Amino acid sequence: MKIISINAGSSSLKFTLFELPEKVTIASGTFEKIGLDDSFYTIKFNGEKSKKEVSVPNHTEAVNILMKELIDMHIVSSLDEIEGVGHRIVHGGSEFTDSVVLNDDVIKKIATYNEYAPLHNPANLLGVEAFRKALPNAIQVGVFDTSFHQTMTKEHYLYPVPYEWYEKYGVRRYGFHGTSHKYVYNEIKNHLGKEKLKAITCHIGNGGSVSAIDNGKVIETSMGFTPLAGLMMGTRCGDIDASILEFICNKKNITIGEATNELNKKSGLLGVSGISSDSRDIEDAIAKGDERAKLAQDIYADKVANYIAMYNNMLDGADVIVFTAGLGENSKDMRQAIISRIHSLGVTLDVQANDMRGEFKCISGKDSKIPVYVVPTNEELMIALDTFNLKNK
Ligand code: ADP
Image (cartoon, rainbow, N blue to C red; front, top):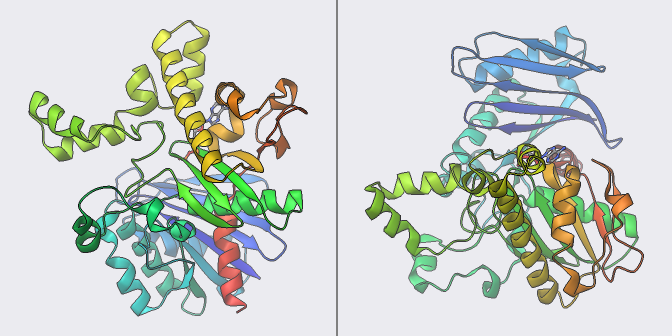
């Protein structure tokens, strides 16, 4: 069965077409700069990548172009072959604890969470509307970044702020990257062949979060009310003292919105190094002796290490630690920097095993008290699998 997995952003739309249950990727691609003058799209199929620069005024048009290309490039012979569309939706609040079939009522409910994720949710829903029109016979499924984390108990999701902030306005920890944490947890569980597994999963890419997972249930995750919380990230600050906001607004005579924007876009690796949000640039700068780049890497590693130690305590001892996403899969330096900071847990590194990129592999030493694995994530496949499962229900 063919299932297409969709990630619609405010000016982009990414797709991957799968054959399931075989888990074969048939084609993938991206529409970028939707609504801008220099919009374009790329499609990867049969080992070749094609790029076309055409006007893509909105998401509906992007989907129309995609449908036409799927036929013209003989990727499918009829659009009816696509039996399901899985949509990444960033915020499902505390209500959507699992993936869900999208109908009018569900879409209306999702829209009530738009104010929690104003940059993402409305864009995700534009993608849903476009595909409901283009493929009316296919099942449409919403897969939320938040839902895997909704097993957290109040002890772990409540902030110690006035209780009415939670009751009246929904201020609490929701967590994000759930699709990735769920995917790598399932992968490592299958690999280790364990019925019950306590895992600490570290999704560290441009954004980053760590989760403590016990027997398939998230106990706690480092992102919070928004994806700004927790770890230091490429451009995001992670956890900081909330009083800084008022202080810096007064000092710089800027609004809370402007200051929050700096915490989201000008902080993290970029803010500390003054060079880049991309860890490849940071590693290049470190090699040339740049001290602030080294400081940025050290702070980053320190935050991840401390979350691992805290979550190991919460789990009363983890069975496995997993690294995934851009840095977790590709940066041997960052993995080493993190592991060198969790000696107190008895974790050791196999330096040779760690010298690789993008492989599913154990990288800890034989004497390590907790094994450490790199597990490449595949959020698109996870979205497609949830869609496939709801289609077959
Ligand atoms: P996103 O959160 O946007 O999905 P990714 O998971 O793709 O991001 O992670 C992107 C980040 O991964 C890059 O910014 C870069 O810091 C890091 N990265 C990718 N490849 C490498 C590499 N070879 N070495 C070090 N870091 C890398």
